[in-house]
Length: 88
Image 1 (spheres, helix red, strand yellow):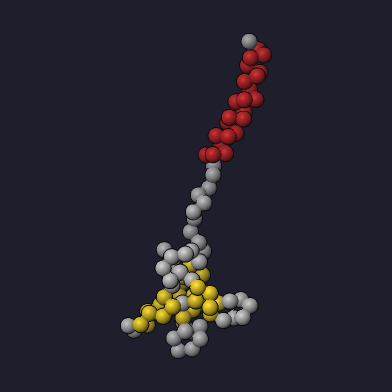
Image 2 (cartoon, helix red, strand yellow):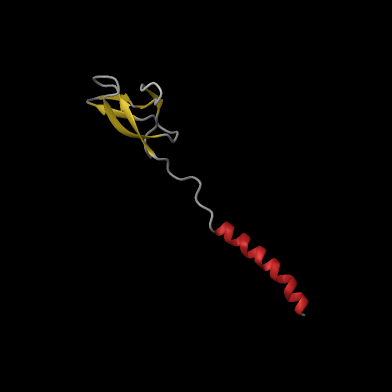
């Protein structure tokens, strides 16, 4: 009987470890960090708005009755040409 209990102990530890691993997994579809988008209204990249890198509806800013597309800045060229999306 003692040998039977000793043989189930390692199995119990493995099962407990597997259950704990599945119970502590994180949510993989989290929110993306906001990114500043810039619209060119009066000058290049002169109006900032919060956007996202998560694919969806194009990020825009409304000035008067016109929507202007907002772009992220390319760090190498410092130009506003990176496509961004609306924050969900």
